[in-house]
Length: 353
Image 1: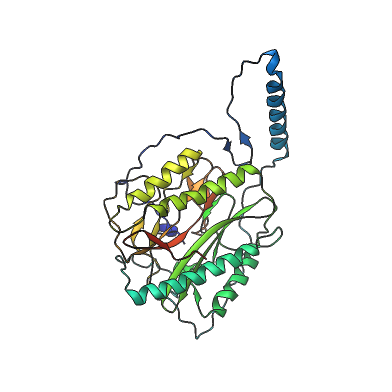
Image 2: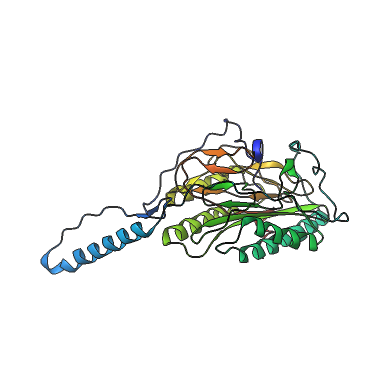
């Protein structure tokens, strides 16, 4: 679950100004309707190369047909939210359950061998639950049905769904559809063919939290959406690739930003990754955009990296429920998240199956 602040995601201090990167290339650019924008190219065509012109005309015709077939989705609307699901009494609860106040952000957590073992178990469970959740993503299925199935799997494993009751959050997972940036509340909304949905899973097992998320496709999507999701996941991988003992945190954001801009997409600056362990959220805060933060990673730290990428440069708007955050212009968003352990030689992805 992306943190922190109002709605778990207030932008960090303005002292961290984003550095501007220029795209390194200009690949075909997808837009929120799923259409491909192809850069104009000039050709000098001789009679011997007339076939080139014919091929270009066929390509243009094909792209126009794709554009006609692509239907703009209606704006996301809040559905009916069902009552909170029960958790058996014998399952331990995090300390924040029962309070509607935002827990105080604690200092960084360093993990010894016992703590790392506990985190591995919690993160492995979160990864298995997320993998199961992905199999439920089909047209006509409601996000509430996905939440209920995931809830049952978590409690059957003897764990508590970390989001449930966090500052009053009413559900066990976050389900963010299409233009929803993050923290979507599961409800009666039915998924449609061509939708995308981020499912954010966090569990509290034997005193440790583990979290991961992934954006799934519902049914069939066009190539522009596939390109977008692949780029968003690659941004996460790039951020993880720089992590090791002694490295500046800022390298994560710089790597992610540079790659996103290369592909022609944008990084949401309002939400951050965070330390995780016996506490759900703690320092360090991981900025996913270019910044000048001077902090350094330390072996034994565990934190999440969870960049949110949008198809267009836009602001974010949070609904009246205090959670659901969407793009102001309706452009689509994608997020991928892993929990990692910093080591002397690199990073271990704890939420990778």
